[in-house]
Image (tube, rainbow, N blue to C red; front, side, top):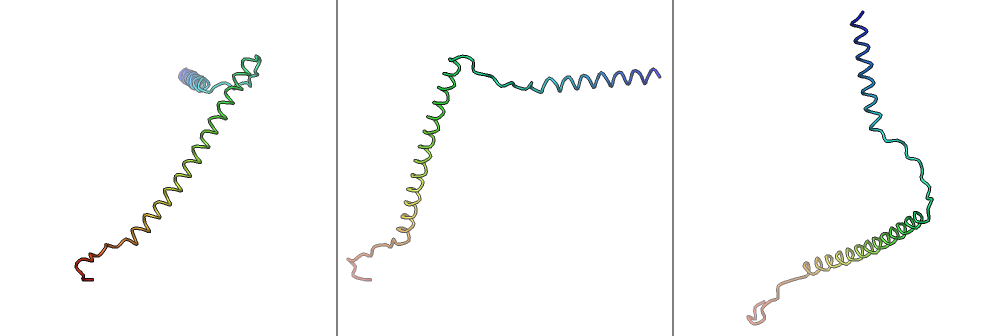
Length: 97
């Protein structure tokens, strides 16, 4: 009987340790924050503006990359066409065909 009580007690303590360990790793829910000061609002506005500028810059770079990739493909096609048409020039001095 005493063994059963100690075993039950040990299992409960172990269970509490495990549960308390799990509970500490779960972050508490984040409550939505309100922007109370005008400085906070100005900071958010400045960050949004910077984000929009970065997005525009990335869009321009993507456009340039696509344009240059198209040019590279065209040059590759031209190179392939010229490689297929290239023939060695005959020496006209010998007179033999």
